[in-house]
Image (cartoon, rainbow, N blue to C red; front, side, top):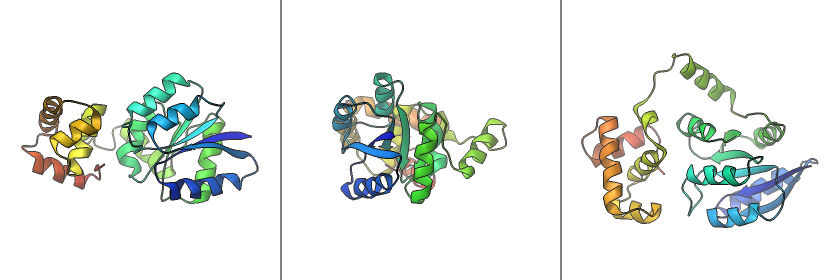
Length: 210
């Protein structure tokens, strides 16, 4: 039996995933979590095989939450779920230790396949993403500038792209406004852009908004 925790801040999404999972004879939903703090508590309560983790959990920015979870539960298999395109976030999630990445537009059958594969110790990505990753490794796909950003810079870029102010980003990430401004300056330099308007345009073009 594959023991599963569903972590997503939308009750309707959690209910839908629970129905899909519990229709399988070899899967059992042990618990649910709606935010990062609740998830950490839930994972410490009982043995779990697979965590279905929403990329945008409130209260714990990704990928920091993923790193923290895997540091505490080294044998846990984490399947990241997201509404964001695979080619923008999957590689970063896999780099941080996720066992797979599935977008929320995939079919229930795809989700079930992904859960079984990561539970067996494999890595799940879609065929299209597998081709993209292979192309990136052998140099056939040109690197995009934001791939050079650190995790924190990537978070700040996403929030700027979503229209957040420096003070709003500082409050959300528990940083000082001065620190956020420093990250913003570094991002501008790395992406060779001039101002926040160009950052927002870049984030929208590459579907990087939070």
